[in-house]
Length: 369
Image (cartoon, rainbow, N blue to C red; front, side, top):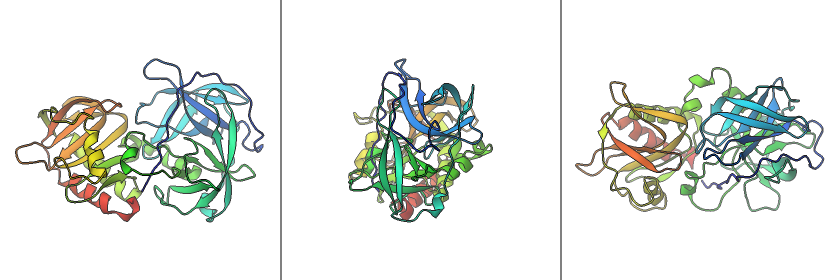
């Protein structure tokens, strides 16, 4: 399975109005989503999105690998700016439901993606400029390519193009303006370890996204659980875990278990210059495991690391888990910031068999290839 890395460009938040003619059903329903720069710089154009429901909510795609939930700004071409808060998250795809705090927008009309056939012609509306609100259309075909999960997503492919991302949150619609889905997120530091040229990221269907982000979604593992996972196992294979429904819950629960059974601090002085994620890089490139099995993931919100008595030892945006190491070396959790700079490490004191079994299943599951 190969993926394309999508970069998010920082720019000044000047929201101008020129745009090509788009179907009336989409006019003013496609929005930009801007988020604050965590380093105090200018706002970042995160994604496109669409107004849904009664018009007070927006469905969009946010990359949580380097951003923790907070307030964002929604910009409509014809209705101005709106403050919005994050209501629900599907961390696997970045699908996010926003609540407008001061107004409403005309909602899109959705189409049933299950009725699409291979080769059907669609149009993707994507952001053509990072300095203003300028949309442009790209003609695409519905394709039967490897998907995150057939129950959640589908693929499209530009006519006459060898592949390439269409833009985070790009809006997939038919010629009349019915919207079928939004382009999912690609996590930029985890994704490279699948190697090779990219394909267009998956399109999450509007109906599935809204179902995933229903009011009871916060009780589900994907709401606060790990993002796209890079993993490898001694004597087995390495790769990127895509988060299909049948495997996501066991893996997410196994990671949660490990993060709640930690002991005292252990050394990270043996980490390579690139930090913990270089272990995953080496293994995904076909090299032997440097020392044990590894897993790396980030979380949409900082996660608490605890010992077996429930005491909070630290908070982490990302974690690297290493187990089955050479004799005398403890299994450990390395943790740190969104930049994957290691802040420290704790020994794993609990049983890692659930993690080992779930990762082995994940890496040998044909749906994850």
